Length: 266
Image (cartoon, rainbow, N blue to C red; front, side, top):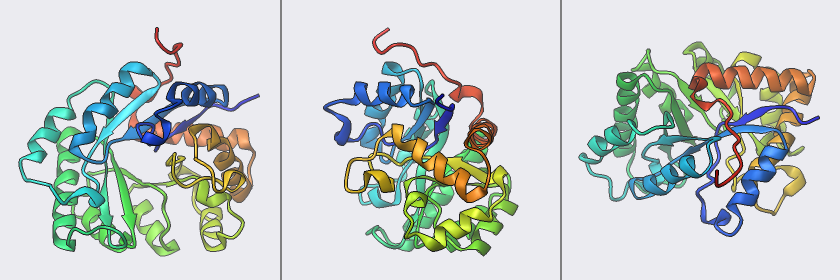
């Protein structure tokens, strides 16, 4: 029996899925996926992401400005983001954050745009989906300026101490394909010691494929493999972990992500 889970981070809008997006969604449903959250990364992408929630009613939306796409960012774009946050199906702000590994935008701009989105999240009472690449420490510093803000650091790969500080702030941590790789010793050890109340499942599809699909396109249906690894590392049953992460997802994002799962096209 497939266990019900939610993919809290999937880029279903990616061109990688253009040829077979409907089949990908149906395969995910067949694997037990109740719903998935698709975060937009930049303004020019917002419309395409929004269309997904009209085509698939088990898709929820998030809109934000990703640090890798700030080269054309203008202050007026925050006003446009405000309007997009009023659209049906929006459950979070993001994907936003800080990236000191790949982003070309300077650190000052990245932090200012990130903090502007944290402030907006407080104003709209929405959680935040955060990207932190070689920048977990600065993300924590920014988050602490907004104690009423809540969210998830997706694909978390920081230290045990950094994880604890985020958890103390009331934040959650997202994990997917990376924890399925036996060679990810440090990450797997970290995950094994985390409290269950902070854990969320994600795929980040089509990126970060699990070990069993290494070298292939990642898909939402592969979240089952992340669930299996998370249960193994936490030393509990898959059923318990599915229930726990499902409850965590509802607690953070609300029941706006409750399953729809209607046949495609209806």
